[in-house]
Image (tube, rainbow, N blue to C red; front, side, top):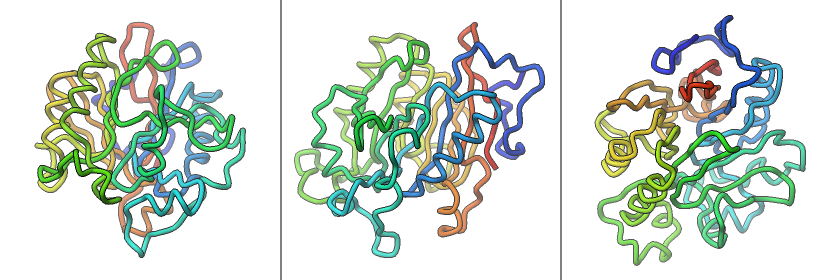
Length: 283
């Protein structure tokens, strides 16, 4: 069986080891930055279903989903004029996202609207019965009775004042130290954390990417797997016992930014022994 640490982002699409016993395991799909291209989300779920012979139990998404329901949501999202668009989320109907999907906020998400959600988190987002959920600013939960997930939305700015966060759309995309502390506290209640989901990378793995508070979060929580995005290219690394999987931006957004699309989704299973293994990589 493919070990999580050996699941290279150069693997072919939907590569699965022949000896994988996936029928009885909990499985989940991870998807990179969506940037409003929600048909790619549907495509990834369909490809994962082809690998498994059934739908994955749920989906995790690493931020910059740009799940805009309307122009008002778009107005509350910090993004450049060149890439400013409502996107495809508004066209989704019940059944289009065929398995529950959970997303964190990136630095290009509609926080003015997202921050109006009162919780509890994860909280439904979009029309009724769509099956898409916002995880919230920070926290931890057991998803589908089997996988413990901790999360943190946004990116870090040393100059950001959390008391001033609501003054500009851009500043809403920064997380606070208190939210990091809350994620740690919530994770400690659950005990062992299987997956940590953040938007940016932890520091120390890339010369121009990474947040030090996220690094500290990884080192304290010590999850099996840390999923992140933001950099738009796939990456595999380690911090202590934690395997880091950064996901690539989804197609066709990869064309806009001229980034490699290999690794824009990854498929995982949690075995009976509690080990999380990567069993497929989108190319």
